[in-house]
Image (cartoon, rainbow, N blue to C red; front, side, top):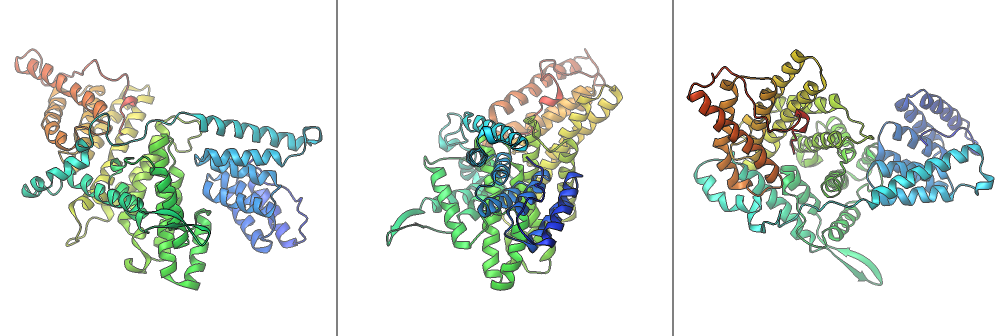
Length: 551
């Protein structure tokens, strides 16, 4: 289904046909980027040729650029509604993006475009089999039960015990204690952004005006909701029964008002943004880009949060545009080009992308395209970029902002580097290699924990995972017992905010292991039964380091 179509076009544009032939040859050799470029050149010569658009979609699919592939395949189907491959490639792209309903529709249309069975040519039989497999997979995914979404109340606890409500109650206390790094600021300010967006979203309504349906409401909702999630994704919750109806209406409203690109991938957005900028200026381009990028970020996040199917492609596509725009408009002021091109915004999106590809790997999906080294590379990029762009002296930001965009992204990245070394240790048969990577893992987890405030639930949790890495490396008690003491000291502070968080059950069980271990072996060291140079670990722990989850 990913192969380009040969020269069966009835078009007479010789230049386009020649470029298409070059593109086909490159695609067959696996040179998808070069093939994509040749098809793009051919489209400029003959923009009404459906095959050119469908072939470029095939190259985009091969490069895992799914939004671009869907956009091109939609154009091909628009030009030729009976073009089976165009519908099939749309279906493949939608399936990769987790859009099962759209994939089902496209594969169904692709099958309908084929001749009757008795008239199927050999190549049509191959296409039919591919479309049927795609349709079956999409239908199976659509029928899967959706896990209970994150909501308030959480885990049977009333809404007043949610972390953001507890943080708001603590506000005066943490200010009085001058504890401006407290995780309470992180979650309370994330909640203020998220909650503000939800309240404004409730005001959007669909009305009939002059016999026509119209959406009436406020713009800027996507800004608030996405800012809240970028500050702390744990703030996401579904507290109203018609959330998805309101959210879809809001996307439609803001897309229309800002003329955002709702059916385009990153490459087309880049082209159209430059063209619109030349014609209409920044006042037209800035809101359109903001809505487009924020809609992608929210689509990726909400799909993952609700269906538990990770969707890193939306973040990757957003980063493609953000990184590109940062280069192209590096000399344009923040006020003119907009917040989305700020380093802090981009860092927040990259943090979501990192967690998404980590989750996709952890789900052990057969279709996962991100390997261990890919995950480690993105994590290291965040660490390097954060170190290269520290908070400038005199910068005016609320305490929660500083933690959300300068501290927590680096901590996440360090923890995932720790997880990476855990995987390397587990996969090896060489004990020296194992021990080297277990110690490396522990070091990264401790670095991550040290960045976070003591009342942050991941501070204690990362220390516990570091403790487990040390257990596997047979580190002495003089190393592991002090970690236990740090965990014990952090627990009561952490529970002030996070006692009833989403990960509370798993977290408390894991931290409890550290307390049991400390009580048992601290007593043995104090009585002289064993030396502090002895190594020991709690036997009733997880089966292997791979079971140590971050989220």
